[in-house]
Length: 152
Image 1 (cartoon, helix red, strand yellow):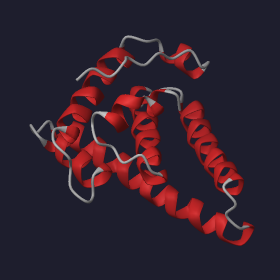
Image 2 (image 1 turned 180 degrees about the vertical axis):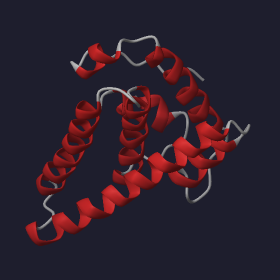
Image 3 (image 1 turned 120 degrees about the vertical axis):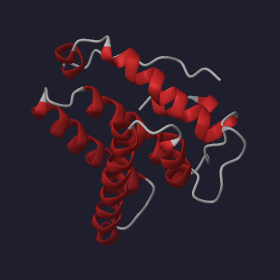
Image 4 (image 1 turned 90 degrees about the horizontal axis):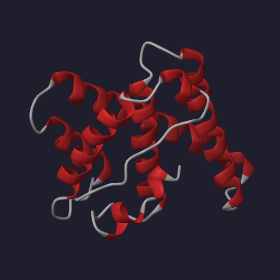
């Protein structure tokens, strides 16, 4: 969560500082962890996603969203999350230049990207993937994970 809240994403790279924008950044960083642990630590991967949505449920309730609509909102967030994960996974698996930038632009900047935001976020994702690849999967599953600072 802390990595997704880095001020540079919002202040410098144009990620909307809204509930949706913050959820998109949390989703992107969760994707990075899931991607790193692909093929390993399956139980932890599921626990991470479960905890993400328990936290979303708690956050919505704290914001005053009524009990009757929380479930619907969390289900919608889950659909969005899994759509983002699939899009980023396809973009990275395809290896096409610009595919990740395009996926980020579509998902994080649906109203149009200000400046170089998608390119900077795509570079950040690639740098984070390399950084996370150097970390032990078991250590990550124990909660010992380090993210790089975003650099323009």
